[in-house]
Length: 305
Image 1 (cartoon, rainbow, N blue to C red):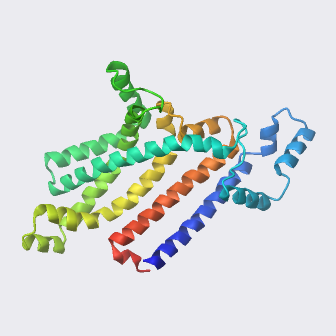
Image 2 (image 1 turned 90 degrees about the vertical axis):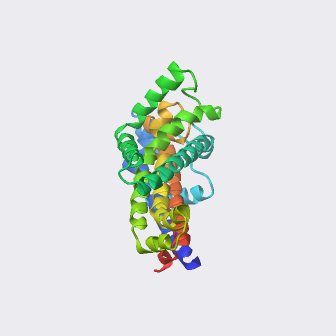
Image 3 (image 1 turned 180 degrees about the horizontal axis):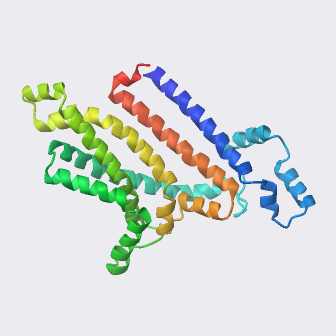
């Protein structure tokens, strides 16, 4: 198990380094950063001063090494628009996004896994058809439209929940439903497919022939094997939620890291964009690594090779 973890960690570290280089390269892909800072009407002398101040006149690999070294120590540069430390700027916003992501993935798992198990245990039943309907609707509805509908119903008409802000837990209810519903169909379908495949296997028929209770067969024997791909998918969905919460945070005016990403794109704040891409990618890689470790613990066969 330890060898497997070290191999997966080495691969995750290699991917993180690759992502960090791509993230840093965005600074130069978007054009001359010195011109972006100095302004379109800047003179050649102004641009030269900016190049000297920020070190843009040095070789790119040297700049990348300095930037990566600073990022490892927690220094992600300075925002061009907000004129403050990017680390402090993101730290204030990341808590909101992390809360939203954790609430949303918890809701998605709490709904999708039991529903997928029930649908697999009762194929072609009302439960199965309801799960299919929920999956189709979840894929068809755009997140921003679903969020606006919930605001109209629960905030404007019924006045039960706030439509914007992040001061209390009530402010996270509607965004959690929208973001969680986005991940529910995929997790539910994968759980259903995995359970149906496992329930038709020989060892499950043997367990039933021995007289084991249905609940024990379903949850102790079948779900343990069927849940392995679901764990990987949940890790991917969590990564998508953190990086893809831009729309939801914008609709509900949640000033988290997702909303900050939209602000940095709209205002051409490249250092903030760089840092957010690096942070979101790091979380994605971390969740995937933890999912691989958990799957190896659930199924020892995955540790081979």
